[in-house]
Structure formats: structure tokens, C-alpha cells
Image 1 (tube, rainbow, N blue to C red):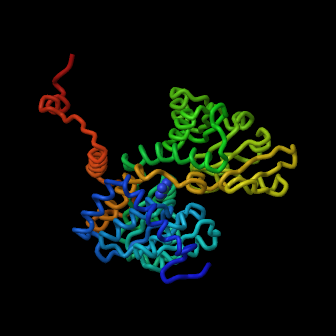
Image 2: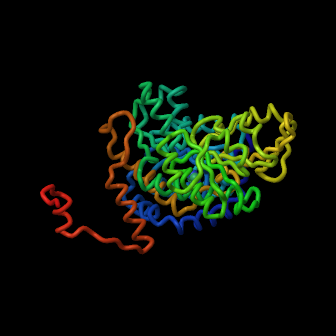
Length: 424
Ligand code: ADE
């Protein structure tokens, strides 16, 4: 670990002023979280709660942390990915907002894991997780701390997939709120957030023109839909790969070509994985790619591309520019260009989802922490979603903030939708 200041392991505390200015800039696009922060400051619903947030350390996460602190939480932050930390934000959280942070952009996996353990040493009662690494470590290594847990929340599709596997094996002894399952989370963050920020990451890393390129999007979940939609908007010819027949039909009817990766590998210029599964682009796919094909990932973990296999079948890796590494395949001499080391390209090479969508995602996180505290002892162990009224409330506040009014049901309409007598 680098030089330690009290309560932190961050790259450079001198970046705090720059970080603060950027955090305040993001806050302008986070009106819903701002309202929650104001109420939290008055009501202090998290007074004295030891809380760990494992999240990408971005300007948006900083605003969530401010809201949690305003609500009385004794919060500590760690990174949910070794390459996503914004070092100026980490510094500002420590210096300007007095929140302990353990996160450095480019930290190695050993440091990342050490930060997870430092977070657990904080003896959290509430854990806000993104990818489920803290909760998995808690269950594997800190059983004696399980009794302290009021509940946990999970931000991502991947984390919820892991939690469902944990629930099946009976190891979850506390309530978990699946924040990703809220409509005001995945409809917007996964689709519009991932859609824009992923292409932003590809463009910032490479400065390539997308118009006219064949863009292969692996996975047509909410994230894949967003990437495909925005790729088309920038003029790319988008090909989708899927394993789910229903999603494949959806992609076709949305106007995309669908084919197996084996075929797509031969024609793609740029590949983006967003499946949540491993080795979606494997060694036999790399062998079929055109010279100079670019591959990257925007799924939570860095195993969607088989980079170990790629390294084994290639000569020395060459770094061409930040977040751009080239591998030359020995068998055919073709070059494969890997962006962002196969880690989330939107956070490695760009700044992650814009604040406007994270506003709703993190409103869900803040309200989930409050929900867990309010209902301490009343919720069953296992996975919960926030009540639908909360989703509707967040959407209503967002509409109000952006100055959009909508219609309401008339008494005649209410009567109609609640009756069965009316027909032909
Ligand atoms: N996940 C994706 N984008 C993010 C952001 N801007 N902040 C925190 N987590 C994110």
C-alpha cells in the first residue's frame, strides 16, 4: 500500500480541491439525491449506523456518501473495481467531507482485497455493495460479524446473480435490497447510463470513428440494449450476440443483426461484452478476428474476455496509449487490441454513467439504507425489492426536478380500470 494518511488509502490528497469542484458539478444533475440529503440532514435516519459503501469512487458516489453522512451514518468507502476510482474524488471525500476512503485507480488485486478487509474491520451494520465482493467476503471470512448486520444492498445485475446463488445455498442470514431490480435503477442506469458511458469510454480510449464500423454487442440485457442503441446512433452497424431466444428476437425486431459470436468474430471491428458471464469472447474467437479488431468489456467483472488465453496465444503485449494494449496472435500474426484491460471500459477510460441517471440509482441506495434501518428486525433474511411506491416517488421527484408534468387518472378512469363489467 502507498503512504497512508489517517483513515484512508488514496493516491494523492493534494487532488482534493479538484475533486470537490467535480463533485459539486455532478450534484447539479442529482436533484433527487439532493432532496433526500436535505431530508436526511433533518431526520438523521441513519444516526450512528456503521456503514460501508463499496462502489465505483466517482463524483456521483461522492454525492451518495454525502447524503449518507448527512443522515447520520458512520460511513467508509472502498472501490468496487481496481480501475474505476477517480483519485481526485477519493481525495476530496477524505479532505473536504471527512469520509474515510480506501481506493486508488490502478490498485492491484491484493490491495483491492485488502481494502475489502479494512472495510469489514469497520464492523459495518449496513453494507452498500456493487458486485457483492464485500458481502461474499463477510460470509466466507467474518461469520462472527454476521450478527451485527442490519442488512445490505446490491447495485448490479452481476451482484444480484451472485446473491441468488448465495440464497440458494442458504448462506444469507440478513435482508438484502436488490437495488438493481428497481425500475428507476435498471431502466435508466443500465440502459441509458451504460449505453452512453460505454461508448464514451471506447471513444476516449481510442478516438475511433464509430460511423461505418461493425460493432458487436455481446448480450442484449438492459446494458446491451443501451450500448446497441447508442452504437447505432453513432452510425455503427450493430451486430448482437445472445444465448436467450427471447432477447434475440427482441434484438432482431429492434433492427439489429443477430448471430453467434463464432460468426460475429469474423466481421466485427469493435466488440463490447455486457453479459455478466465468463469467456464470452474466447481464444477460438480471437483466432477468427480481423487484424486490428478492438475488444472491451462493460460487464461488472473482467472475465468476459478470455485475456489469459489471449496472452498465452500472443507475443509480448504492447501498450499503444492509455487503456489501449495490443496483442499479436502467434498463429496468424493478427493484432487484437484490448481496451481498459478488459475492466469496465466506461469507468476505466471514461467517468462512468452520467450523474443524471446515477441520481435515481443512488436515490434508491439511500432510501434502501433507510428502509433497512427503519425495518430492522422485521424483514426476513434474503432478497427484497424496495416497495413500488418508492420507485414511483423517485420517478415523480425526477420529473418534478426536470419540470415535466404528467396526467392523472380521472375518477371515470379509476372506475374503469377497477371494474370488469365494461366490455364490447
Ligand atoms: N456505475 C456506473 N457508473 C457509475 C458512476 N458514475 N458512479 C458510480 N457507480 C457507477
